[in-house]
Image 1 (cartoon, rainbow, N blue to C red):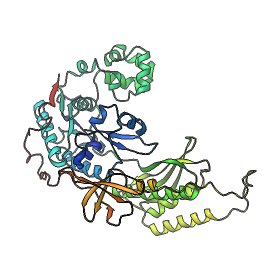
Image 2 (cartoon, one colour):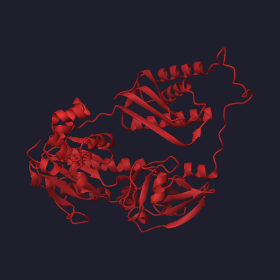
Image 3 (cartoon, rainbow, N blue to C red):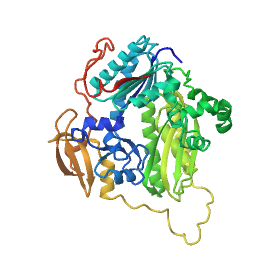
Image 4 (cartoon, helix red, strand yellow):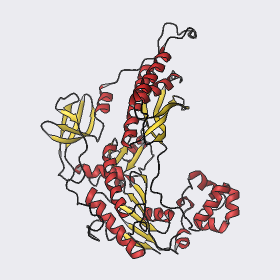
Length: 488
């Protein structure tokens, strides 16, 4: 524990949904749900307007639609979220060399290591200026927690939501934590929380009073020791600048189980290419290719192949994934496919062409006819693999024109997809920072309508090249005063 609240935790407010509201003037102040839109879709983020109606992350989209039928349901635009995240992380990096990103929208910062704060007053000023800078550069709001440890800084940022700042003075940790639910502590999920509740422990005070020995008996040695320390407000974990990713992967869940083996292979190859795109974006390479298959009965299989050396060659990864698929029985149907790369490195195999050639040779061998094949089951002679229904016009439109994604029309300019179906796509033409736009409907094959890249949320952001010295110490604005407080 530190004697000053110099560990900062930043958590962007309803990040995906807020970015969509900022990008689409017609959605400001309205319920927005971002996530998978198919029958098996899951909510990734909901705006605060949608949360009031009971929608939350990880909820099935079908349930969210029942709770908020009039909300805007959008497919995620990770290209936009990553670009905004890079802007935010660059601001954090100018405060301190020790920045520990947890996700696109969340990070710890060691302010003391960067000389940005050494006591409560300077920590508060830095937190206020950070929130001002984030709004100026991205147009979005973030909540800031300040404390003497990572655990308490994260608790503080949660209390600060939305669009606020909470500082926890060192020395007040136990008093602050005592009445809180045990679920507040890191690592206490629904199962552990229920187990503790049955033992009569519902608050952090109950855990501290129970003692370390009792907690070890209830939840095990490793977890019990850590849980007791957290209940006392003790957390000595440092901010770690380089959280090295152990793997890069992508996966898709399908609205309808896939039966056609050719289609399954095509999806695996498509996922492999997407995986390599992420790998290259991270400037990494990998040595082990992993295939994940979830079948119709929810059984999940993983297969892996280790290459001669690290690679970021899409041909190598694609063909390795295809070979792994050959060892998996998919005749009953496939509901999810995933491709990943592990054993990451900062360099690639020098002889990529030779490695790709080896991969192709192995693939050709795998496709050679076997000398003997198992006889077909009775009643199936003469029937090939189960064929899938061809995609409907609605499915084709949804695949080509995802709801919420950017488009450009030769006559009307930049817009976003409101919806598609029956051979039509509906577009609202508006841009970030502009007025609410007008709606037009086109054929899904209109040659003048094309997919487009997201526009910046702020067209002319404040120059933060000399941040933090160049920006004002405070700025009045939504939530800037009311959201700032200390927790004794």
